[in-house]
Image (tube, rainbow, N blue to C red; front, side, top):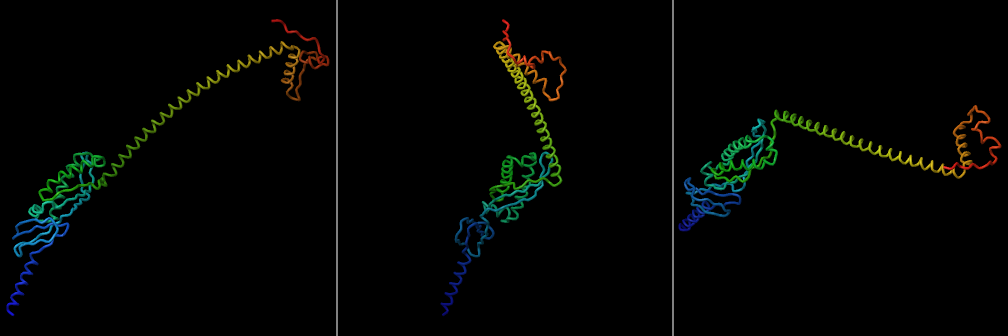
Length: 298
């Protein structure tokens, strides 16, 4: 009976020893094994491991990516303007032993030291450039410079700085209005210049169009005068041929045209001698055929 009790006691001690010596490393974490406060080994892979019971202890550390956010940090550009910058950094614990020795494994302490270094890097990088650089393609270069400056501090802490991003860059409230007013004035100046150039182009186009129109009208009038002269010449030629064929009929036709022009209204009154040449074709004798006139020889 006593042997069974002793055996059970031994088994219980062995079970407690095994239970106290085993530890599990989950995914996303890593473990430091310390013997009397001194680091003896590092476990980076997930799984079941054992330690010396009562003599060794384990300390868990994050293996996943960690973040550091810095919001509304006031910096000044080299043109004197001040603005607020929000940054975002990603890092991981790359060397657990160094991390333990430098900041006693405290993430809060590590974040504080990184933030101090980040603040200095922001002031240096932004202070070497005008405000517009943070809003242009040079922004990528600035982030690379900040990451390079902070990486050295992170390495001394056993950390690996993976990336640094500038989330936002805003002017201070007291600077925003003056900057907006200056930008507005510049845009108004550009608009006035564009309008002046437009008016100048408008006058130039109108002058060219007026000159072209004057030339076209002059050419048209000249052509019209030429055509009119040619028409008058053709008309006179036709009249001359008609007169040569029948001079008496031509005189009669011209008299009718004269009557038509002179007697346009019903109340026309003319005081002329009855035997006037104007009334030559009004008498009865005028309607009788007379001797045909022979045109004079040229």
